[in-house]
Amino acid sequence: MTTNSLLSLRNEWEPCQKCVLGERRLSKNGSFVFGEGTVHGVMFIGDGPGETDEEEGRPFVGQTGEVLRAVLQKYRFEHHYITNLVSCRPCTPLLDDAGLPRFRKGRYGAAIPLLRDETPTPEQQLACSARLYEEIYLVDPVIIVALGAAAAEFLLKKPVAISRQRGKAAQCTIPGRVHQAVLTEKKQVWERRVNGVTVRPTRLNEVRYTVLPTLHPAYVLRKISDHGTDSPWSLFASDIKKAIQVHDLVRDNNTEERENSNDSESITS
Image 1 (cartoon, helix red, strand yellow):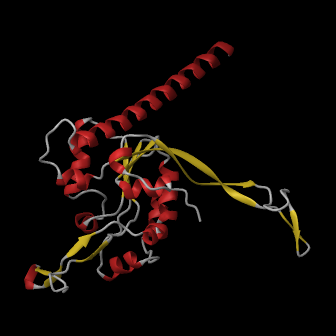
Image 2 (cartoon, helix red, strand yellow):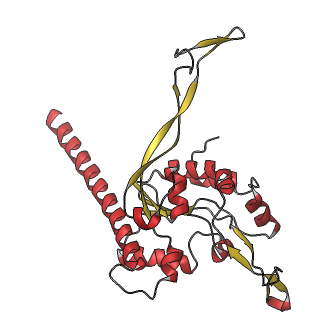
Image 3 (cartoon, helix red, strand yellow):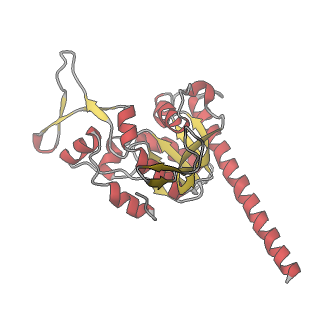
């Protein structure tokens, strides 16, 4: 099923219980965390919402998000969209040495279980993949920045050593919306008869996007006291700057093409 707007996509997926993350979210009355930002810019994709994100219903608004947004403010760049592989918080109970759940006191003395954020499992990522692919399609970014190995591996469909491959652009493909005719596997023909019915096999087209893997802001936050020239913060900021430069170059080229087209129309008219 495809939608025509990000709002309708959000409304379609908000009740989702395709995996245990959605079941937990609804049982705990947590927020569904959908992406936000502008289309046709730089799209940032993380792995999953954290505690503050779940509370506020927005992506990357906790301490980890402050790292990302600080870099965006540093370069005064606003043409971006932020989302995650999954829209529900991936977490498990935090256990003590005896293997029992740990708690903290909440308001009015109520015991609240402590949770540990985790990377969403492949099964959880797959359950949310149709939402993410449709979100990418609707945002139609100039470039995607994969925040951390999980996002990079999901998009590129292969293992990613983030420390070695960060800052190196690659290509990913996502399902499009147009059905294209394809040859049958065995006889390599455009159509065949099945039980007296003519069958013409088709498949969805694929849309290609440039992906720039980088460090996850959570890792950068843990190493924030490192002020060296090759510190995680410096590398992270450098990668985002590179993505912004790609965006600006594409934008300038598109503007120039439109101006040349207008000039050509003026000459021929």
